[in-house]
Image 1: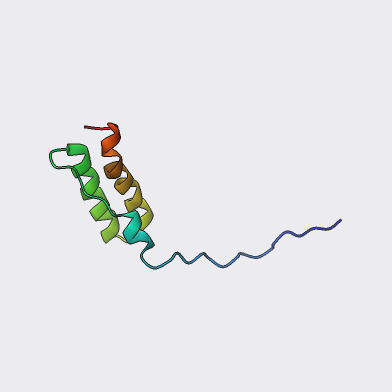
Image 2 (image 1 turned 90 degrees about the vertical axis):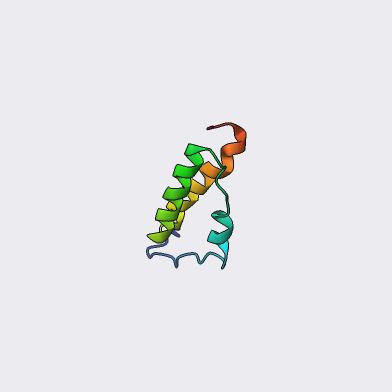
Length: 70
């Protein structure tokens, strides 16, 4: 039996410099309460160092044009 399982944790992946800047690049739509709420949550998440959490709020803001919220 040839077992090639890794029995140790691999090194973490280093994301390229600027990755989160690109990921979080968005602007809330003026007059949209959902966008404004997401923007505040994004700002709070970034302040806490939670870039992945902030990216979810950025996604909500970027998807405004699809009509998912008004």
